[in-house]
Amino acid sequence: MVQHTNGRYPAHEIPDIVIRRLPIYVRTLRALVAAGYETVSSDDLAAQIGVTAAQIRRDLSYFGKFGKQGKGYEVATLVSEILHILNLDRQWDVALCGYGHLGQAIAAYRGFEPSSFRIAAVFDREPEHIGVMTAAGVPVRPDIEITSVVRAMGIRMGIVAVPERAAQDVADALVAGGVTAILNYAPVIVRVPEGVWMREIDPISAMQSMTYYLDSHTEPAPRVDPCPAPIRPMHAAGD
Amino acid sequence: MVQHTNGRYPAHEIPDIVIRRLPIYVRTLRALVAAGYETVSSDDLAAQIGVTAAQIRRDLSYFGKFGKQGKGYEVATLVSEILHILNLDRQWDVALCGYGHLGQAIAAYRGFEPSSFRIAAVFDREPEHIGVMTAAGVPVRPDIEITSVVRAMGIRMGIVAVPERAAQDVADALVAGGVTAILNYAPVIVRVPEGVWMREIDPISAMQSMTYYLDSHTEPAPRVDPCPAPIRPMHAAGD
DNA sequence: ATTTGTGAAACGTTTCACAGCG
DNA sequence: CGCTGTGAAACGTTTCACAAAT
Image 1 (spheres, rainbow over the protein chains, first blue to last red):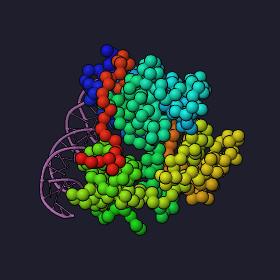
Image 2 (image 1 turned 135 degrees about the vertical axis):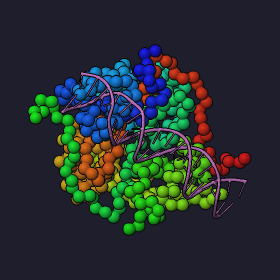
Image 3 (image 1 turned 120 degrees about the horizontal axis):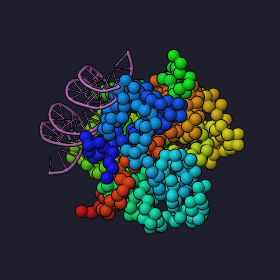
Image 4 (image 1 turned 180 degrees about the vertical axis):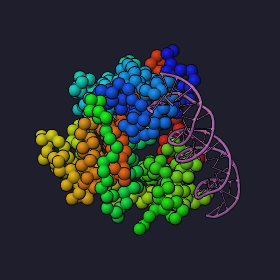
């Protein structure tokens, strides 16, 4: 019942593109906390991220008023607020499907826990992987158990890291077990029912779109200086 | 000199979002070729991909006229046309930076060659990785050689698969060597000079944005039937 | 003085709808 | 008749610019 809209914007009207930017705000704000900042203006935060200050203010305004005029935003508080908006003030169990090279890299990645996720179940098709333990102590189970285990554990999110020919079946099994959010690494369009969220991780497409801008007959652009300034520790700020 | 615009749309006016969709069109069209299709209408292609037919027609219209009224598009020809537009009718050497779990998974992935890419150089910081050969026979070199090797090999694209604290340095080294397109897997904002293209692979952000839609207190949505139809082999199409 | 939150304008993208071609 | 290519309209997103708050 505790919804994060403050009455003005029904949740279903908030653009998804705004939602997708919030994790970047969290990440950057956390870096600012680590650097010793207590408050930040939308201008400074925007400079860090490489977007406009107006965009940050507009994005946040969908959810409430978090800043103070003349002062900016209290960094630690804003992190908590956004984490709450995103339902990240709890941990989410995730089912990892596929324990090949990619799946093993995902299982070994130390970035999930601090991001509110836990690889709670792992599945694979290959007999030689079954029964293996991940570094976190999760056993690899046969893929035929996806639906039943996901359902029994109440898992709501899945990662598809299997070859493209298996991706649709694996996604169907996840959905059958009650999963409503899927991160898909397979280079194929996976169809899911209404009400199931899906995000694609598609490095090949990303690379194939960048080659458009790489003229085959031209040498690299001339060297320019590196860019805007990175976060500096608070204590170094003097003038 | 052989540019892919046919005179009406200068390349610099074509929206990047259109460019980013072209690889999906290629992938889907190739699946249609494999299923025995010779022509396809924008309606059918749109249904396969899950977008509107108007969007496909508009996207393609930026580059020329590839269809025939009353007939649709010749599938094999359209694949070639789009590959040409994207500069994918050649192979691109790519520098992989980082040979940890993720880098090893990337190096082992068999999807690059058919997508016009080749992992041509691999770099890592850890002494125990240096000198190791990838499955494709590429030696892992120390990261201090990134700039010189990339420059010597004429490499134009790089993949950053190192921990976030090293990502900026590695990207700088790539750019110093002449790289102008970077795929970044590190969960940090990497700053690059004007003229360098960058795409982010950010699974954690993708997951953190999906949790917004997973109400913490609600059980999974009721079961619905699986969706639109997948590609069927031509020979099965009868009615 | 500084900075937020937000109407209104500007800009970008998608969809409609249909003339015209095969 | 079926389907493309595309003006024009609709829709979505970003930016401007400023009143109000401290």
